[in-house]
Image 1 (spheres, helix red, strand yellow):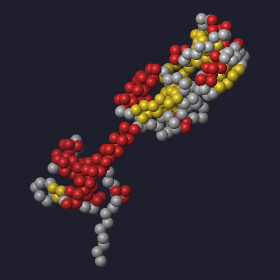
Image 2 (cartoon, rainbow, N blue to C red; image 1 turned 60 degrees about the horizontal axis):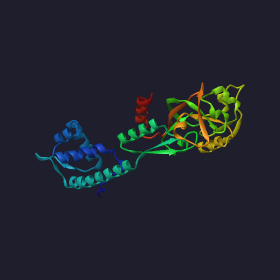
Image 3 (cartoon, one colour; image 1 turned 135 degrees about the vertical axis):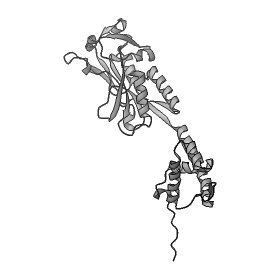
Image 4 (cartoon, helix red, strand yellow; image 1 turned 180 degrees about the vertical axis):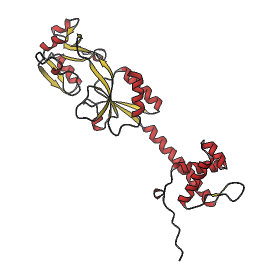
Length: 292
């Protein structure tokens, strides 16, 4: 009894896309030499790729018995099917690329120079970018809501890769009715005598920034910038924020006062240690060229 011929499926073979590409090139060029020139590889490379494809499929695709290369009936049918498959593959890749984006997380305010940089980077990469506000210490990275994030401070217990970018100066934020609102500037040490409004989630100021023997008491705690701003406006205490807030966020009852001798705020780019976005490596390289 004759045994039926077994044709292995793709998942059970060593076929790869380069073999398909070589076969299509040979058919299009009409020769192995022409295919090699088209693919910019050597002629033996193309020949071996087609031979491996035929061996894996257990079928002869090309008739080499005549002076001119020609397709066998099986090769002709396979070439037609392969062309259709490649067209569908191209469509799938186009759909994926058109829907891909880089999700950039931030807390309360995104510096203009960084948003411009990200837009330029993603345009050159051919993808969209989304700026997502997430008032958590890791700006959404720890929950997978964002791909990269601009952080002020490094959260504890979150596995991140961080790249320091620049330092931001601080200003004091006080109620318009506070005596500090009439000052041209305030020394950092003076603030220890005033009650502190502290944003415990996305803020950059805590009593530990002052010397142990002379620290402000915390009068109000909140979990986001908007609540913090309203507490300062209500004269429930003072606060400090990066200077960017004085240019971008106004409130009729809040005055921003320059600070002297205040510690700066470290701004960093953060990415997950594992399963980073495919553009993570070129993004870090571009960031290093632009800001470091």
